[in-house]
Image (cartoon, rainbow, N blue to C red; front, side, top):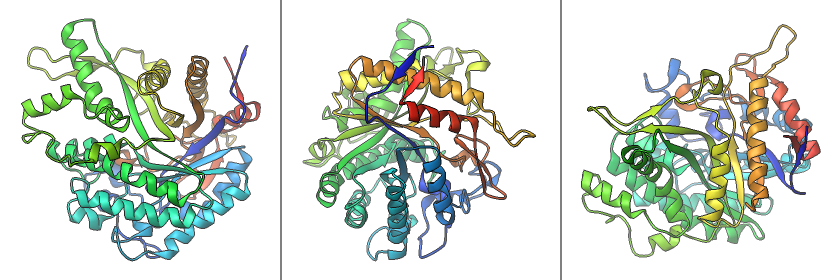
Length: 452
């Protein structure tokens, strides 16, 4: 088989998020987050699971860093828990929380692993939500204060900063659909939240650059590839609307195009923006479009969309056979990653791109010999790595790839049923066990290449 060789210096890493792995939810001065509150609300999380302990990474991080080193990772993307730093969202700083991340960064650097820090991966301090949360402009202002505190402490060593992870999830999934914390169902709230998340990103970028000389700052956007079920005008139009709702509402303003006019008109017609874009103040759009050093992209799947008919709502069509679906269930569609990378390069002209999340959930566990033979995950990653290499050959400035995730962990509203990790976690004993995919990934990193 031919080998697909990646450029010299290509970054190979994995990623986690604070609430999904850290645990220690009430320790060392940490404040309550919206996910602490949400997961303790009956009926919100599958089986009543919480992130109270999760993978106990807060206590077991030395073991985890050693395991990363054994797997040959060149980078680790982690997130900082805002309420661990500013328990009330603003004001007094919890130095013990800062010390935790400082020790983690030092250990990563000592192990030869480059830290990539995400400032916000969904665990908003509950105190800020009590004031209104992301629909309030004051939350964007508080985020900049938080970004300043963290980057002043870590900016001498952390040189890769991601402001937000997946603004669509922070806004639409959390304030419109209600599947994620704080669990609201208000489209207007979601649109205001989206704007303030993006605004806080733009305001924070120059702060991060000032506090981390020589560093780079960007944002991570998630993307789902919407494919019309047919060439009918109705299916094509519905796929376009969903692309605007999920993708363009975030990509367009970050890259200086403003909010998409077709979506703004649609929201006004539906009554979800009764005052139009009145929440946009002078200078906001210029701030949101702050020049980026890179953009992070999270990609998992596509959706094949059929328009509404006979009184039914628009729906996803399950076009692929069952063997091509992960346990989420999401279709395995590596071609979508190539299309995404091409779109962000040729349309949005991103200066540099990292795949900050890509991976799959499969429930394969240890066999009688204590081995996790997750061949489906290896096949998934191999196909997506090949799609990324194809994009590189087309001229896409792809600089790195972070597999989601390092550890099996708390998968938000789905609790502990979904296992995305390269490393198996026994949640009862906290034993870590590298899966076959982790060992395979180590060989990819060593060779800086994947078999076609």
